[in-house]
Length: 95
Image: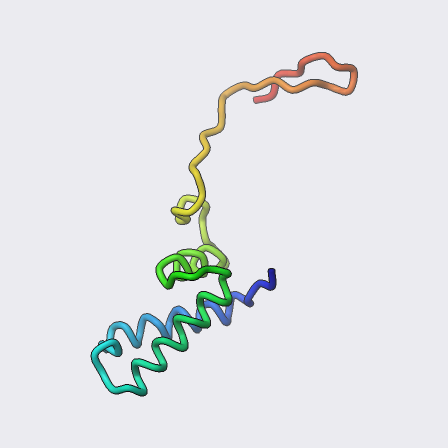
């Protein structure tokens, strides 16, 4: 899948938020169409079909995104010790 540049995603998110804040859903036909276009573009750019999921995915892809910011990924907790086999086949403790 092609990945949109973070600057493009940031701009799309900003436009979407501005249109939403200004009430484009209940505004002129041109404003509603612009909001629909931005929503569609965000979905295409993130490979999603829902604007809420597109916003989550886009924000996660922006630089500085932290793993705990993404509700799409399962949270995995590291264990204090685990074992792995070495090249000789003997278990090796890893911290």
